[in-house]
Image 1 (cartoon, rainbow, N blue to C red):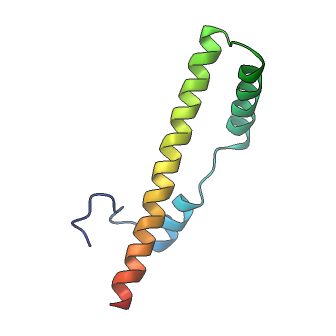
Image 2 (image 1 turned 120 degrees about the vertical axis):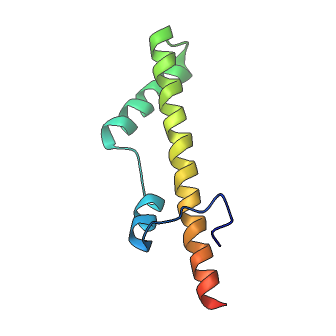
Image 3 (image 1 turned 90 degrees about the horizontal axis):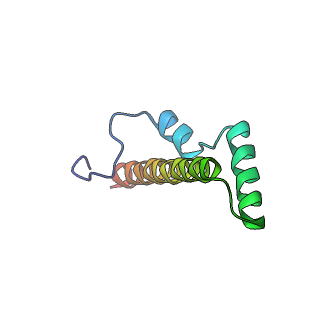
Length: 82
């Protein structure tokens, strides 16, 4: 199981579950929602666009971590059953 580079090794099941359930903080989610709504209405200023891009990168990173945590949990269950 440790040969798979996508596995998050060295974390407990509880830590993996916490990562899998992770979300943006309410303040960050609110700001992201605001910027997305404003962007839908028209162009953002350059600093706002840069902020939106950074927030979207955070969402992508969070999604990747969550997916890897779920995958690791699934693999641990599969190994324990075999």
